Length: 261
Image (tube, rainbow, N blue to C red; front, side, top):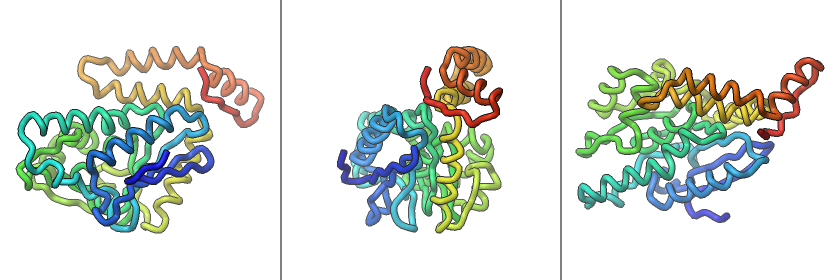
């Protein structure tokens, strides 16, 4: 499928999606959100893809924010719909995506860009990365899950400070507070991220999908994460991957997981 705003490549069971709007610092607009949804939907059903890497084109920005021109004249109803649709199509979709999605944050990740990175299952940053939620400086609040995911990642007090001050932090600070998992020189970012992704491809895709669901359950209101873990743990025993994994271990060989139930 051809896209106007993103590039998709697949190599060794790893798909890389690159947001490709360099003249706009890869800012998110409606079309880009829809294209990302389409690409992720297609990759979800591709059995040859086990991990997704999400990054931005160029050396300046992962995603520098939302495209403000698209909503500068919106009213209450239109603004609410913008946030709801974006969360449904992309941000919540990525958080609950059954395959690991890793954000390779190459440069600015601001507003919707940081929200996109936070929706991914974990984040690797380049050493030139700058992150923040500047929405209150525009008379807005984060609308793509930023008020929810940032406190989950860094704690309530620090999230409140970052949101209220609209401050940007650098990659070193982001690592210190747990917003990113690793920081690498820009020229090493994708290679390092691919190395981590390759390690993931060696493991059971079926088990990983259940692990994602179990971890996310802890952050859902009214859901007991421990109960979800017990349920998912039991379900693993009925999968072909469990049979292959335990057999390979006992036979002292590398498992050949097929990712099937």
